[in-house]
Length: 496
Image 1 (cartoon, rainbow, N blue to C red):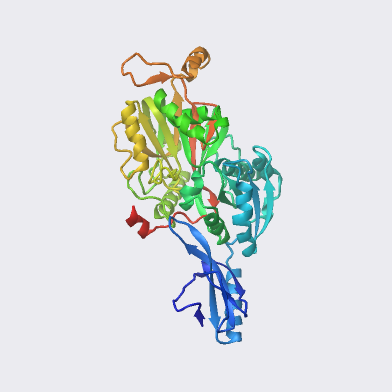
Image 2 (image 1 turned 120 degrees about the vertical axis):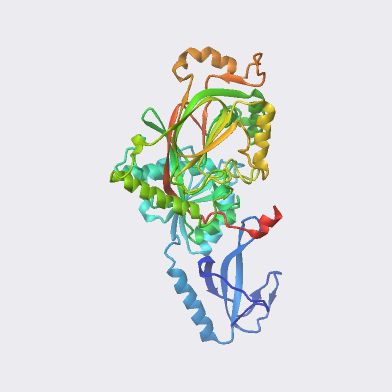
């Protein structure tokens, strides 16, 4: 048996989309021309082909046989092997946000994704959302047991809707009170797939390595599974939101708050608000308390990024489970007796990342060595400093230098943390001052580069939180994605 052409070809079973009998009268070449086949018995393998920058492409390989029985044997054997891949989805629920990004979500799905799902014999039920939170509310009501996964077509906002709906539905079914900060949340058995089509696709980029719809569709088809941590954010015994990427107070909180007022500017609002916030240069006083993640085998500055089949995530989860068992049987200190650390001061930004938060503009992200499933978050504290030094810090996000190598930057790997604003008790009396701070007052005190405003807002995966004082807990591998993780690419490492 041989393949088209003289070169040898190997296709892993796990990366075959489907197999079908080839046309016995002709064959389709990459040139687009049809030619007479010298050997009439053939079958075509539709499979994954890797391209540059972590992209996957749909490829076809035709294998030719000298005898018809041999051809049919290969065809049936491969089809049986594919049928035994239990991790592959057969029926999916798809939510499409037609308004996100540039409004191309529906077209991207119909042109790039739906044909691949059809090729892979995946049936779908498609819901095009008409309003905010429709996907979240739907997941509380419909029977999700009949689906092998939920796919969201849109940006980080659409993914967040599906995430909240799926986690909330799972906790309700398990009788878990989400408003209890110390509640042990139940992992969801249903995987989530992301087809990037939004203004920000941070989660997709940080878990696959590219924001390409075809790549994401192929990850879903082959049935990849990637466990991911989720942080719960509480205030006064009430759940505010779940976070999977960035919790940002100060700089990133001010950007999202200002950009919401300028939605009429489209995607340009993020750049405009970013520049405005940088020059405003507000700092915020408060206290950060955190519980170090002693179970993790990695550290924020070890320069070991999270990759497919991550050793750090596997080992850290095992260590965390052993730690929890010891606490359960009283062999070690319980949470009440664990040693919390406290940091007070004035901060330009407080960031907590459950993943690298990489994107095309910042390929390494806010915390390059953050891990997706190690049960911890990287807490980054940027203390009051000059505009020039803060600019140096921001520029580090776009290059290969250590962005934490500044005297005014501290980074910790944590399981939990709390933030209390110094002004939280005086919020009512500060209403007048807030009006003055809206456009940023000019400073006359030394140093002339930083104003101590009352309160910032928390940016939770692109959404504004109503409370400045919060309590955050990381839940290890609470959800699973249809993703493999970012694969190592020696060629790209050499290029960079």
